[in-house]
Image (cartoon, rainbow, N blue to C red; front, side, top):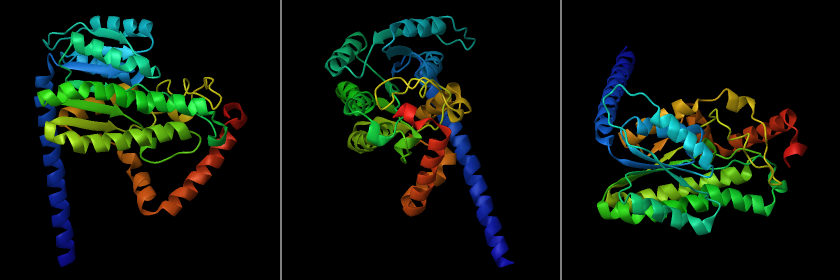
Length: 314
């Protein structure tokens, strides 16, 4: 009987804490929304998918959004869509800016960042969303493909980030967001270069966060799972060609709007990371019982080989 009472008390305390935390977080989000108007937000990879949806969220909150991606035509389309958005919340919108950015062109990254800083010296939020996926067996990936994936997802991203750090640190204010992937938390077969680049990004973000916390600059990593975008369709194969098709997991995945909303709310709450709850068990298994995790991934590799024409992607 005593044990039952203790369990009920613990359950009651847990429920009260969860409800209180939810109310507290919602209040933080409301306060954060009120303070967003006029802030400058740079979003890479904003020509489609999660980046495009993030642009809508921050634009509709009164932010000055700077759209950055390779495809200028698509950026123009996104800007038109933003300008055509009808708002009934009384928020004064600011015309978005566009800058062409290719993170694989290392010689241009600092120049592009300086162009942004010249026009808008105060960057409040930097969202590193641009990236490229890779589908192939690890043995068959050409070195130049490994290099390209790492350049875009890691080296280019951190070089772009570092260009904005001095102004944020000087002002003692700013938020840096890295849109990573759940495979940045645990490795999955047949996407070795992509997984490696996201692991590197996670580690860099964790180091940077601890180093600049004293300067009141926040660092957040979002690690979404399957999101219904063209990330797989546009992925590279081991030979450097475009994969060209999507898959069942992507097509049934989270919408980019929902993913962007999760990131948006996490920024307003001041979270350090966003990880879908359904993957928490896998992350725990990798760290606590790695032998079991390795067996599961070996089976996953065999299933992948049966469902896909592996020869096509290697």
